[in-house]
Length: 504
Image 1 (cartoon, rainbow, N blue to C red):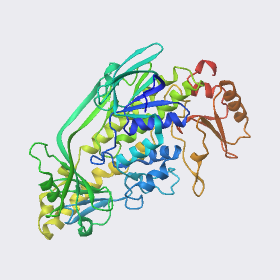
Image 2 (cartoon, rainbow, N blue to C red):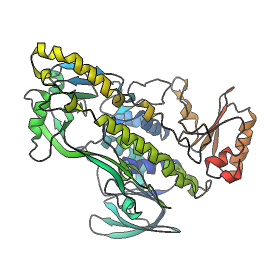
Image 3 (cartoon, rainbow, N blue to C red):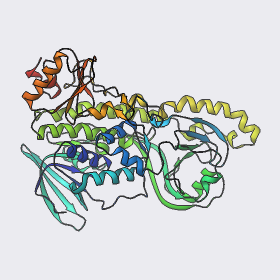
Image 4 (cartoon, one colour):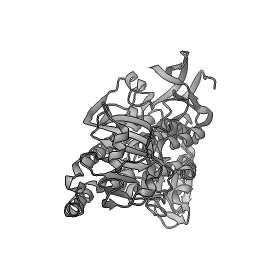
């Protein structure tokens, strides 16, 4: 595609968070440009494997949840179990069910259950949704912000250089973010000292030999080689994390054999050494440049929060920029992005770090590798330790669905949480009735409904009425969070848009 001279919003980085930001902007009718150096999405480093129930709700909001599920190699019905074993082909110690919200099918708690799906597939679906707004083969090399906008310097793989003028920039350019450096922000936090070694491999016939049945994760509690193994598809492709293994001298074939507990046919497809990081940017924004995803925060993968936190970032900054650019919110509204999202990232980092405090090496016991009598003697104690220490990792709906923006300057007292979900009839989610802008949910005969409708007309704000006879009124933001609830909405919409002086 041709490089445009100007665009309302330029997004640096086309990973899942940058693409999600673009999808949100297009959902709100705002033109944008995603600048991404990778021409193609690589499946050899699958990264995240869990798309949370909340992220799936947001994908549903964009009309993409069904597409992701249809293409996912593992159906949501495949398994919601984490199985703890002494080896893949050995003995089972215990298991945890209902993992990652995968058991929420049909539950009133969420419009969508979680989904096991490799990150590259999510990226491909989002790339298709973004369409011609994606510019591949280029990357953001620098930017200069002024009172009227941002001049962004981009370079191609061939060495070409162009300048694109944008009203706003969203930096989704990862740990080595150019945009983070440009606004003078820096990471605060630490890196875990323990090395990890990821392997993606093909193992024909392994699944048929395993005695443990389907699982989301298989945790191998072998002291000689602890780690986690999972399937990427229902053919022969697998992934594993060998914990405590430095990159230097690592033998991926031996690692896989050790985790399996026997010599098996293995083809190594990719390796990826890494250390967990607990990092949070000290600031998320300047006046016109905003950080999202890994450019703003990094957390250990345990709990499956990874890019899901970034999807929440994308929707929050996306609807706010769109509201300004579409003319129905003041230019100060996006400043609330950092106020709302940075505490969520801090909580997520803390939760993921707590999950990381007890991993397979800490749970492993040499007696698990002994004969049947030795194994059974120690198994109950190990199982108890697993269930006691790992429950929060696999059951974290309070964090995934329960985070709140309470205390935000654009949220009324007693509000800020995600609108409680329910099914109005089979397959008909309350969320499906919400508009792309604000929505007023409740009894539309209540006097407050007319007051909110009049406020919306005055401000030019899109407002969808969702009639639930006999129920109190709730003002819902574009991101499905509650902005206000009660009987007297005087000034409620003004407050939700950052215009508190215009209401009470």
